[in-house]
Each structure stands twice: as C-alpha cells, then as structure tokens.
Image 1 (cartoon, rainbow, N blue to C red):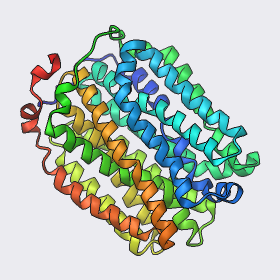
Image 2: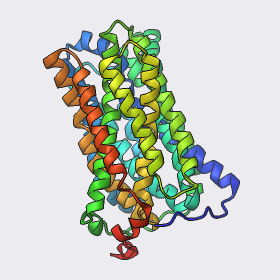
Image 3: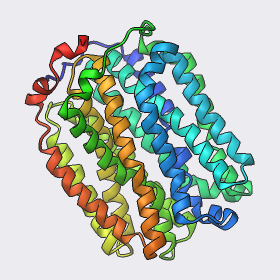
Length: 405
C-alpha cells in the first residue's frame, strides 16, 4: 500500500481541520484521567476498593469498545455531524451529572455514558480526517491524537487542584464539561472543513475486513499497547501516593507523563510522513515504554521523572502510530475508517481489563509492581508484532476490491 503524496489543500482548510480536531480530541480522556489523582478522596468518601475504582476506567473502555462496533452504523443513520454533536453532548452530560453523584454506582453510570460518546468520536474522526486530509492524514491525526493525550494531561495534573479549590472531588471530575462546550461550538462553526457529509445509507461493508487475519493482528497490537496506557492512566498516581507522594505530586507526575505523550503525538506522525515504513518508529517507542515499565516495577523512586519521560514518549508515540499503521493498510478512506473502527473496538475490549486486573493484583498482593512487570512482558510481544508491519505486504492483506464488497 502506498502513501499518497500530499495533494494541494488550502492552508486555511488544513488549519481549520486541525483546530476542530484538537478541540474535539481534548474531550476524549478527561472523564477517565481525572479519576486516578482523586482516587484517595473518592475511596475515603465512598469506601471503594481498588478493584471497584478500577471499574471507573474499565467500564468506559468497554463502552468505547462497544461503541466502536456500532458507531459507523449510527453515522450512516444520523449523519456524521449529528453523531459528533450527540457524542459531545453525552460527554458533557456525563461530566455534569458527577456534580450531584453520591455513589460509586452513579460514577460507573457516568463513566459508561462518557465512554460511548468517546467511542463514537474515535470511530468517525479518523475516517473524516482521512477522507478530507488525504496525504496530510498523518499530520492532522498527529494533532488530533496529541490533543487526546493533552486532555489527559490537563485532567490528571489539574483535577486535584480543582477539587481543592472547588470544595470536593465531584467538582474535580465535573469541571471538564467546559471542554465539551468549546468542542461543540468549534464543530458547529467549523464542520464544513471536513467536506460534504457522506450520503446517509452509503456504506462500505466491513464483512471482508473481519475475515482478514491481519485485522486481528492489528487489533491485538492496538489493544495490548492501549492496555499499557489505560493501566498507567488509572494506577500511576495511587502507586506513587502509596510510596509517599501527595495526590498533587502524583497527579503532577501523571501530568508530566501525558505531556510527553503530547510531544510524541505531535512530533512522530509528521516525521513518519517521509516513509511508508513505520517499523523503525514503532520499535523506538516500544523500547522506550518497555524501559519505563522496567524502572516503574523495580526502581520507581530512583528517578520518577525518567519513568514518566520514558513511558510518556513510548505510550504517546505508540497510540497514534498504531492507528496510522492500521489506516495505512487501505487507501480508500471509508475502508480505512471501517478498519480503524474494528481495530479500536477489539483493541479497547482487550485493554479494558488491564486496569481491573491491576486493581485486583493490588487488592490481593498490596502492590502494583507485578502489574508493571506483566505490562513490560506484553510490550516485548508488541516488538515482535511490530516487525511484521511491512508496507509492501499491505495490498496482499487488503486488496482494493474490499472497497466494494
């Protein structure tokens, strides 16, 4: 599969597309990322175990998996613009309801609602970007995914301060509804940059994609990589709080980690535009994350800033690259979007259980160290999978006729 040469695209259109993608992307992680730094306060008031708290990350990721499978169908029925608006409203309402929440079950319900909104956006935005951006897809995707990571950085670093300033953890969770308001305004004013909407009822069959072994390989690669992200997002702050850090310090460490994710998300996609072979970049970020997990398990206090840097660059680079590699497999925008939806759906289903399993390990053994060791082993497996992504073979795995099946 070839990487198309960037076609002429008006600078204003490209800038508008990036702006809208960034403001939408900022909403895709705060509902989960704000939980970890506030875990001790939520536990103290609601009496939740680590396993119970893990569900606040596991449930939205499960919803994200389910939403990825039905998002394309909803887009055909409602239209892309209506689905984007509905998804942002789901995130907005889920965050606002947390202001009045009194139970762990209520928090879980808001996590599910936000998760579905996140999923629908993650299914459609990549397809819309590829359809309009063409050869600039990696560039726009880089900004979009950097914004996703940036939203996590903001939420993890600011949630404790917001909770203290506003008088409780509920406000620290609910404040992120403001980002959804900004995204709704930006989409409504700038949606035209993504081009004319696809006709409702037009569809690209994904049946042929499900039958391809490469689809499952890509999904496994995305899922195991995202398992590292979701586990770090949920449990890095409590891990360091248990080792003497204050909640603000632990949240700040996660904020630094996610800031490095933003850097990796911004820098790597434009760099890989020069070559269709993403394997050197994939190996570099996987090695970085692996080193981070080794230090986190064995020597977490020796250099926490180095741990945050290695994990941030590794996980932050892996997330956009794994999506870009999946979309590289087909030049047809709708087929690539359908493939990305399947890969994310299966991948998030895999990743959803990592925070729960890590919380279970913490409840049984009293520490997260074994969970970090397990994630390090998974990243060794990912290195082996990454070596298989030779772009010369993409056409063999996904022939062009799939676009009309």
